[in-house]
Image (tube, rainbow over all chains, first blue to last red; front, side, top):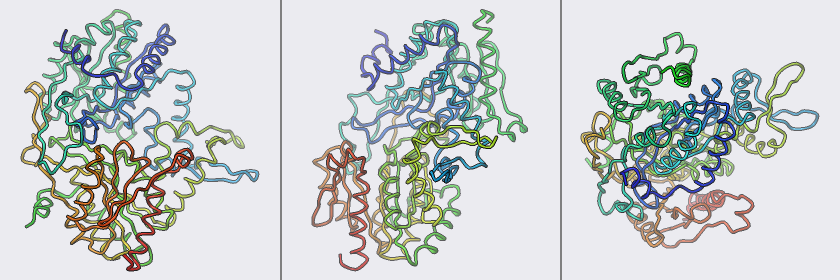
Length: 309
Length: 309
């Protein structure tokens, strides 16, 4: 048994996994015959440090890249499977976080009947988002499945990949989630909350096997697979991206630096690379870099489906 | 210098700290003469593992207890300072997470003018929340200040405590945030993201000094201070709560078990304790345990202000 198989053997599937699997199956069956389907993963995974989890190691990710990209994939005609960290940003809903929503509303009396309306000043801003959301809901082209831990994520990733293998090259995988490289093995985890009066604990982390390898080679071999690389050190970025392409044989790494990721990414292919960015004018207009990333990718994907790359 | 003083010396104040301090000062000055003010802390703190933070250790807390309690304190007549983990639940907004909000809306044509309305079926449910929110906003009785890291939290906690000391026993501190016991000292933190090809790292954690001690004894000595204890092991709960009361000299520990915390807590005083819980009927009706906790506390606080306890 390979290391990744052993890893799955050691992790129980998450609660509700059978239901999630069935929804994935239904979605791919209903939409797969005629549509391109993209799997977008989004948000960070957690690694529990205790069995009754009070503390965990988390990866930084609000889910901005994934949730914005999902919207642009929908408007480019894709059906979207959105596998996201619970409580991270979701497509459409991301525009109305916190108290923004309540501040948009006002009460009104209409024919002696109370109604609640969106204030006039917010109608123009809200309208396109609401229309797109209702279109996506109405056409059933968006399937959202939440995860919390690394283990939840890995089970959903494999199940979605296996479903998508049935539509061959029309599947894209856009793996934007920030997945932990490390985990604490079950047998090294304390059952109860670590007690601070016993002195500070030292946490022993183990490496997670790289799932991109079986994903590209076994689970969904004909899909257009895009992975992400986030570094804080620019010097390492291209080198590490190309190493990943050599190792896993997928199509593209989208590489970004933590500090500049909102307006600049590198598309790194096995034999060439280029920058996709926002100029100052686009930044001022509030254009999101995800719209350009998805535009570019949709074209690349068309060429791939046509057998041109 | 004591350990807690050294700890503050070693941590720079968060961005925007001067502004937060001024808002706290203005709030206490405006409302402190006539009102009771409660400081509610809510959500978990993060402990960065790297200087350019990609990974951090987090404490489990969605902010349910704190955000719900803040609402009940407002309806009990308190002014509320709500210090909360960014992206955790907020009072009022907590009722409309994720896509719930967009599902409540519909577009309508009115005198040839587009408007967006809350669907009739949602008006009755939304109305009381919106009214309470607008009342709290209008009367200026709610001040919200966000934090992310342990360090941000500790700076805000001290500043709020010091402001509240001016109103003596009319201040309550309701410390529901899940604060890390551990941190990684700045000089042991790598500058860049830890690289997985260098093998799994071992994280060295240090104990955070207990801030409840200076808080109770120096920062805000006449306030009614309530701390929380969350354990996964019931056997330890009362014992550890009483140890905390002996050590820090505050008024009350609200003790709860991770698995039962939504319907049962223990009020642990130095010389007695009792359970506050929801019965089955109350659970069915959707009553929140925080309404009972706050009711009970408000009575205790009145007695304390009157010099009766």
